[in-house]
Amino acid sequence: MTRYAYFEGAIRPIAEAKISVMTHALNYGTAWFGGLRGYWNPSQEQLYVFRMRDHYRRFLDSGKILMAALDLTVDDLIAVTVELLRREGYREDCYIRPVGYKSDPVIGVRLHNLHDAVTIFSTPFGRYIEDEEGAHVCVSSWRRVDDTALPPRGKIAGSYVNSALIKSEAVLNGFAEAIVLNQDGHVAEGSAENFFLVRGDTLITPPVYANVLEGITRRTVMELVEREIGLRVVEREIDRSEIYVADEAFFCGTGVQVVAIASVDHRPIGSGRIGPVTRQLRDLYFRVVRGDAPQYAHWLTPVYADGDRRMATPAVAVAV
Ligand code: PMP
Image (tube, rainbow, N blue to C red; front, side, top):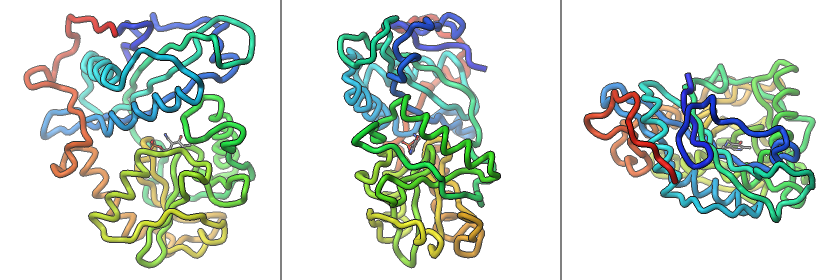
């Protein structure tokens, strides 16, 4: 159960972290956010946050798109997050949600002349998609928001209405998730995950200019597959029908992790079961994020210092 949040400059009980109904971000979607995972490693008795620095760099970049003026640095955000997780005292996997938002209680659509605030909370977290080894997926009837209208490069709250339209249509039609095409009709990504397919000895994903989020897991997968699995990695446009003839396809993201796609629009992908590349990648990914692959330890931030791993409530208040 979530007990604390970073709110108005300090870590406080979650019940005190409240905003007004007049808040600009609630009325106009003028917020931006991040999503990180903490992985509990029972044999090391350690909680590792994956690629925290990269996530917070992107968080600040998303804020730039919304003209945010924050006095928090990446290092400040990392320090606050570590302190927040220590207070929660997690001994299980968790999800971390930083949110930046236009905090003024005013009417008037704009980005300028508004105050920006940051809050961070976390929650225990398991799977995002139930069948991680064989999700049944459709192509959405919606199109991805475009950089010319609502940039999907950043995690901007308002643009997640597009994601919600995509996800609900898919789930209510009996699918686990959807692949969404961009305004040009090429594959962009999933509602909240990046998309890859395997053809022969090549791993293919849409480029960053295809109206996709610049995913941290996407970058991780590209590096792991090239270096450890030995496939060629290519960023290029993908047409809808190319998915149908792929050997393998999968989604990746902080929430979904790596999810094999069993079918798209009722057509089995490859054998219709998780393929060898996706399986190898999933195994490797989970070893990396959980701290069982020492060569990738530089991507992990350990939360607990020696001696305080079971610490529930340290006395210090962090104000940044
Ligand atoms: N695309 C979208 C639209 C997302 O919301 C997410 C989740 N953050 C991703 C891709 C995956 O990004 P990441 O790997 O950085 O979590």
